[in-house]
Image 1 (tube, helix red, strand yellow):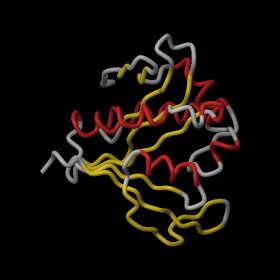
Image 2 (tube, rainbow, N blue to C red):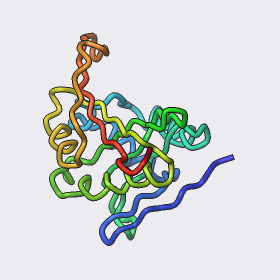
Image 3 (cartoon, helix red, strand yellow):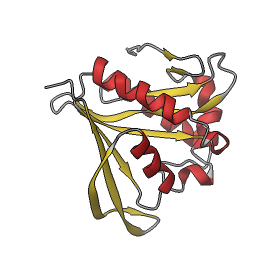
Length: 180
């Protein structure tokens, strides 16, 4: 049984559940060299990208996260995606992630979408802590995290392997000051 969550709409953006017809855009994003350079997921074929669509559904069904397609209000423009995974109700925290097509970088899309996602996490999911894990070389993401009031907490040294090499990961977090 698929759970359903509300769409979030502003004058400029609509954050909604993924639908089957989003497959092409998810593939376009998660195979784009500029997006996947620092991203932990990538796909070489449309068929393989179906795995990601299943991942989005499973997050909802398992209660371990929620991801939104970020589109224009008329749904004619697909900007990217954002949401939560590794949601822990016990510890009231989740990991945030996002990606945008490069042609929309620097246009304020994430600056508008991410607070909506964070507020949903704090207000509707009861989160106290939202974590972001960032490749130290991803300067754009680090700038975005700072603009969104995420605090840099430190660096996990050589904690993951990417392309056959150990990489470090910087930890950012935002706390819900209104939760206890």
